[in-house]
Length: 472
Ligand SMILES: [Fe+2]
Ligand SMILES: [Fe+2]
Image 1: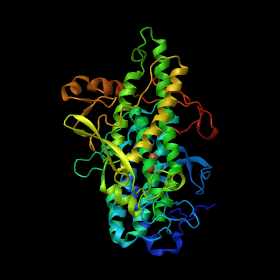
Image 2 (image 1 turned 45 degrees about the vertical axis):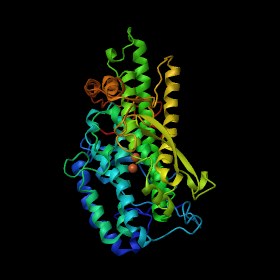
Image 3 (image 1 turned 180 degrees about the horizontal axis):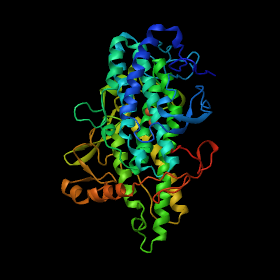
Image 4 (image 1 turned 180 degrees about the vertical axis):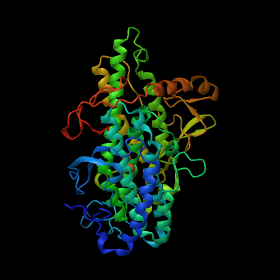
């Protein structure tokens, strides 16, 4: 088990003390990072003591360290999963050859771009969520928000380490740019669209951690299969942190859905809003919105870039090494439905070109499992309503379905039908106003806002009424 050295200014398990140049470069970046955190990180409870976990080793169980921390004093650092002995390139033209410990010159720019795009999402989500604690539905939820925030900050560190350690001067410039872009900024926005969307209410936050962090899980999973071993090890460790973010989103949504069901049953007309809650149709519309936005993050259905990434071994499929026997993906096809002359036409495309779509389908299957667990809750509550995921073609702004109209079942429809029915399918201004109006802080330990059920258990064995955030 690899322990993290906390004695240094930047905790790490990459032996930073023996690489003076790199250590100095990162020590120079550190104050800029802290300035960034101060100016656009959490603005509420910014200096309060929060019950947080900090990694003490890089094993999956290395999270034993829970305690009160003021966020600016969080021990952000550089932790890579332990090397796998004799690891070979999992996928592509070089499958079976030893992995790379250095960046091959011919892939330098594309690898740097892949790292920058992933890295950019990490600080973006912290920025999107900076004011959320002002309306936290409980201290338990505020604590979960902050745990996610500090770990996204650490993910930024993880990626910045790679840029500094392996990409020289351009890498350092990119690391500086990561602190210069801002979520939603008109002049210097974050790279991906979903990371410029505002996150101003807690239904959005829980959709975001459920669906957008899950996109992160699959992107990190594809990069964990990379031929570039330091990237693989970095992503493998980030995945262990990501699991908690997904738990926050999935369980947060489950609690909102459970409470919607309870209020539906209490109200004589089955109207959860009349009882001061969020109704299930509104939750469904938020799910439709965020799920479809996140599908866009996987890129075009048919992509030569995706084929190149796979061929060169820069990325693999989800669980490439474990779940596949055939790692070249040559001589195989994937069926894609194109829109042609107002109808859907199936075409078989080379599998390598469809790698974005393959990853998107793995993601979709993971989301479907989550939704089926929410529906168990609705069933247990005795309701007939079920949450569903819209079709992969619904409400897309990227790829071959962008610019066409589909209903949530994936049927091609015309623009007039879309305009007539879109308010059934996507959050309306009125929905957003209603949700926003419910957002009032609840800062008493153990108390929950009316629109969300209590969690089934606390964090790390603590009771639900534990003081997860020390309010004064
Ligand atoms: Fe992350
Ligand atoms: Fe995350």
